[in-house]
Amino acid sequence: MINDEGEQLGIMPVGAALEAAKAAGLDLVEVAADADPPVCRIMDFGRYKYQQSKKLSESRKKASVIEIKEVKFRPKTDEHDYQFKLRNILKFLADKNKIKVSVIFKGREIAHSHLGHQFMERLIKDVAEAGLPDSIPKLEGRSIIMILSPKQ
Image (cartoon, rainbow, N blue to C red; front, top):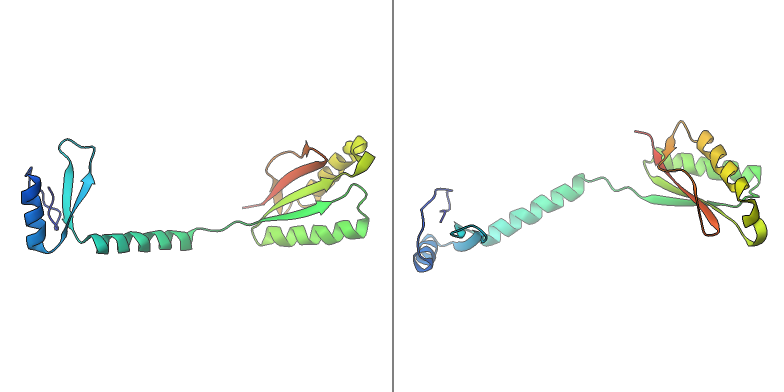
């Protein structure tokens, strides 16, 4: 049994602990049920729950949210379209977002998947100053997928 100031009161029966909590105008809360004997504490449980929610909201405020943006290409993407999407990728990396880059094959284009891998290698070289790939580009179904992360 622990009182509201953090002092140990020793081992006591449940009835006596409830009387002590009622006399203090606070709640009797079981802190460690697995201990032998179980540890209980006299505290204002409503205030404790409020403080816990405040700590949780503070930790959420401090946590940085990383969005994953997606940019899709085709193996026959024209140079102007490539440069336009490359500018968007660089802008997303500057905003500290991760980017999922996909090269999507339609029909018989899948027979030339090496073009997609060359495309990804070119993209890695073009964004080398702003970001790095998390993993090597992988062929998954009818698309080659890669995740880019901003440099620290």
